[in-house]
Amino acid sequence: MSASAAIDRRSLLALLLEWAVIIITIYLALRIGTWWSAVAAFVIVSTRQHALLILYHDAVHGHFARDARVNDFMVNLFVGIPAMLPVEVYRPLHIDHHRELGTDRDPERQLLYVNQAWNYQPLPFGALLRQLLGDLLIVNGARTIAAWRKSRPFPPMSAQTMIIAAAWIIALGLLIYAQPAVAMIALALWILPLLTLTQLLQKLRSYAEHSGGPGVTPGWQDWTYSWRPGLLGRMTIWPYNINRHREHHQQPGLAWHHLPSVAADRACLAGSSLWQLLAAQRDHPR
Image: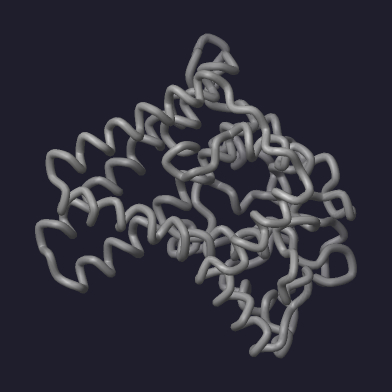
């Protein structure tokens, strides 16, 4: 963000682009009206939801606007409320994650993998399959939410957040009233990916970012990793430079589009080696 810019224009354009792709995708699925168009829309919407959540992560660090109220308005309007994750809920967890990275006080260690097979180490194939299916089928997400609600009080929502939520509900209600069939299909093509495949993509990215720690992945002596993904990886697991995650933890004050300016660690892992980091029967990536 330039010194003179109140809003990070690249982030705003990225948000608008992702929403344009989602809206066009759902519109085409409705017009075509076949099962395969619905499946294609499901996958495409899921990848773009994940991209929105990466931009959301950037705004959690305050990179969308110099003014905190404008920053939080943008993130909740475009992502937080439609993704059912207001910034007031996620920000305290994420700031603690940066502060306590790799320790027992890290919220990701406390909450994200609670009652699950994966414990920052590669798994045998059967256990890995159960883990991934649990992430895909809402089970593990429900466990995380339950653990969070038991361990932390629900944070207060700002008046601004409540107004944004009310605006989304009113807009959705008007759409349902005007075009009930269209609205319900469109809503399903938003909610079903959000609760399933998008959560799996989020979890795969989390595995990639903080797998193992010192002594688990050869060549790394830290609790976070950077990757060299190909085009498919950037479209799915690592959009908006989130693959430069070690650099992000080293310099969290940098917006996503400035991370490529930071010298990459020579030990960056190849995106194609992610499976090797997850499955115990394979060698660790080097």
